[in-house]
Each structure stands twice: as C-alpha cells, then as structure tokens.
Image (cartoon, rainbow, N blue to C red):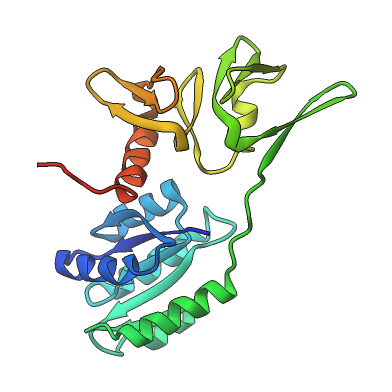
Length: 243
C-alpha cells in the first residue's frame, strides 16, 4: 500500500536528497513541498499526508508550535519525523510525539530501519474493492476497478462502466465522493473520475482523456487543485520526456 508524505524544508538540496532516499521505497509518494510553517500547515490540512518530514535546523520552536496548532483542526495527526544537523531539538521533538529524529547527513541504514518500523506500526488498510448501491430491497455491488467515471444526473448519479453499461443510483454525486477509493477524484460539478483510466490532461482545453475510448471529460476551475494533484501522481508513475 502507498503512503503519502509532505516535506517542510526551505533547503532545496536537502529536499531532493530526502526524496531520493524515499524513492527507493516504491510505496512512498510525495504529496507536497513546503518552505515554512504557514504553507506547511496549509498543505497538511489540504493533502492529509500520512507522514510529515520537518527540517528543524531553522525556526524549530515555530514548527513545534505548528504541530500543537494542528490538534485544533485534526482528530488524527500525521506521523512527524524531525530532521536536523544536531541533536539540539531531539528532546522537544520527543515531547511533541515525533515518531523519529533523523540526523544530517542522512544515514541510509537508519532511514531504512525507521521506515520499516513505521510500516510495521502503521499498516495501511486495503481499500474497499466494491461499492454497494442500495435501492429499497435491491443491493447492487459494483467492482470499483470497473468504473470509468461517475456523472451527475439531477439528484441521481450514473456510474459509467468499463464494459459500456451505465448504472444509475438515486443519490447525489457528493454522496459517493467520500465513499470511493483514493483513485477517484472530483474534477467537475458533474464528474468524479477513476484516475486509473486517465491517459491525458489538457490544461488548454480543460479536459481529461480516458484510455479506453478516448472520451474527454471536462474539468472546472473550482476543481483545479484536484487536477494538479492528479498530474503529480501520474507524473510520479511515469517516465518524463518533458523538455
């Protein structure tokens, strides 16, 4: 299973080095990069990462205060790992329930042990492979991997399936937004898309193209952040040929 992470660090080279180490573990995906506590707290609330790496070399008290503040907004905080060139902030990190404290320069063995311990203590649950559509005494079970996209139809929702069938449910699109696995993304007031079937994103035309039938679905400005997140995920899994 995959874990998402945010890095809060104003040092670009340190950021790249940490990402390089984490790339060796195929199940850690970057959610965002932040340069300070303000953008850091915004990214944590926005992307809900599983892990947050914080470079404590500068403004450590500010970052510890950020962690305390997050308790006001979240029932469950992400796992925090502190990074520093010295052990000066280690005690304070422990008091703030940081999972671990990494010293720079990074030690590959220490990182490997820490991440394996993390995965052991924080196993990811398998997401539901099916979704149940209820209508009176009728229960219709859909394999989520067979769903291309969902389309709003007044107060109903159409499930457009891989085999070409359309299955309707008498609930709004918003009802299903939080019930579906993470690979389903809201891109428009009328569409939720299975990102596994996306072959192209056109910002110029504001459309996503599907792999199977080359169908194009529009995305709106109000969901632009979701499209940007989708682009990051797809780019992470692809070989880049951008100039």
